[in-house]
Amino acid sequence: MLDIRGLYQLNYILMRKPFIAANWKMNKTVGETQSFLNEFISLVQDVKDVDIVIAPPFTSLYTVSSIIKNTNIQLSAQDVFYEDKGAYTGEVSPVMLTDIGCKHVIIGHSERRQYFKETDEIINRKIKAARKHNLGVIFCIGESLEEREAGKTFDVLKREIEEGLKDISAANIVDSIVVAYEPIWAIGTGKTATTEQAQEAHKYIRERLASLYGSKANEIRILYGGSVTSDNIDSLMACADVDGALVGGASLKADSFSRILKFRR
Ligand code: PGA
Image 1 (cartoon, rainbow, N blue to C red):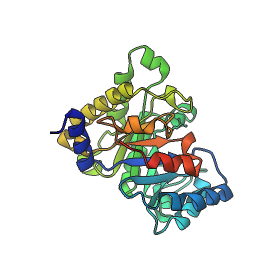
Image 2 (cartoon, rainbow, N blue to C red; image 1 turned 135 degrees about the vertical axis):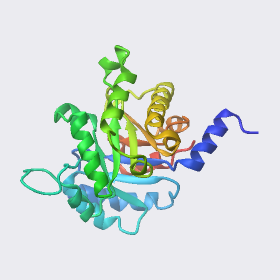
Image 3 (tube, protein in one colour; image 1 turned 180 degrees about the horizontal axis):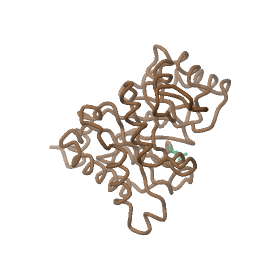
């Protein structure tokens, strides 16, 4: 007989393949990217049951794309603009990303919301543009410490989900959009959410997704992000509604990221 946790895990194994992505942020030159991949590809070649994604800076996308051909690694960008082309100095379009082999793009990361003033509306436009060109989306949401302490976590998540996914159909979300819950206070601070905090937020996010997409919400993968390491990945992945991770600092070294990908439930 399966206990409750076993049932959850069965459900999760059957329906949602783990998705673990490296968010390198503004780190690594092309040379450093090449040395990482030289080591990393062989370390993870036997990992078949996880979607493995690397999101390097724009300058390394083409290099990664050429090196990972015929491997089990997928490429993601860290941002995209919402127009196809034109006079938008400094921006990169979804067409350009698919052209060089990107399968995914991170949209709505809290650092972009905070430092580059990206609003829910901009994020929604970017998600629509990415989907129009068939790019998978890693859609980031999460509350600040101030918001958590003021008891506003669920309000923030609700708003970010409803505004970010406005007019995105169910057909456009399953298998194409993963949601990354990243409490801002846990990003780069070494202060991970407890498994209870993570599960509570992920469960709430799935409920909100169900209010928009009905039972399809059970097929949407929800990642946790914020100080994920090889030491805490097992307990996070054991939570019923945690389907993967978005990893910053601990994804910069091939051995530590490969250990995370080989987590044990
Ligand atoms: P961190 O970053 O793992 O370094 O906390 C995660 C993220 O911002 O995606």
